[in-house]
Length: 295
Image (tube, rainbow, N blue to C red; front, side, top):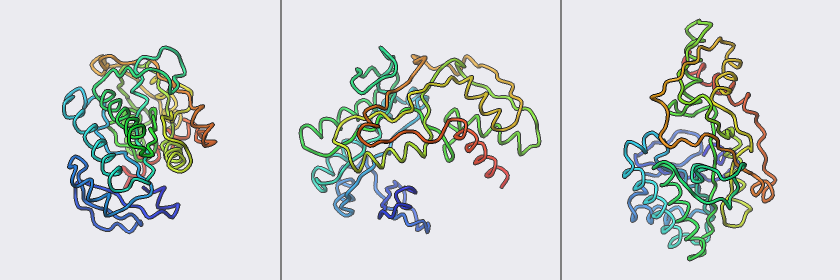
């Protein structure tokens, strides 16, 4: 939303709750996408040229705790939004935030968009369903839908329910508390993920909303980094000694050991490439948490 507003777009943001004017150029509208009629009404009223659909239950652990709720939320909201666009704003370009999680265990690395979908957790299943729905609306109804299969992303502003944000907050707490050591507890330290800075991800979303043909596009760096390496880089960014402990209770069922995507299709279509290295992402995230905790 902030990137669109900075670019001079007329930004309308949806929330299930009423949000007042914040002075940032973003206009908030109360609407619940789980309500098909409400979705149609808001799309009819706004008449959007671009739609970025990012609303979802997005935490893998939460999806294990409530698979039915995750599937219902992530598929119903996507279906209702696509149907609303089809009926009320058929010329709009829609970017659906899918996920690299839809691929599951890779047959080969890096994973490209032609790989089969083999989701390994309820969240991934829900995103695969939304992804397939989006492809169907493009094929059957001619809606201009782009499926942005974003792999793991991190950076300033992410809530600490995610690993990197949680680790960065713990380090910032140590800095603010005047300590020179910090303890971090993780799950599998050898699990490897393809991390992209959130600011690069947002730039990719905007390009996908402007200039590509409908289809699926990976948003990723093509480089995987282990949890162990991430924690070491965070320690360097924070200037702290790290005591890293592994808690087997944090191991995820059906965890895919390594995820790494190919961005060739996205780069070919838009000339996008990641600009922010992981070390800077981690340093900026620690600094963001430090500023807020100090305040």
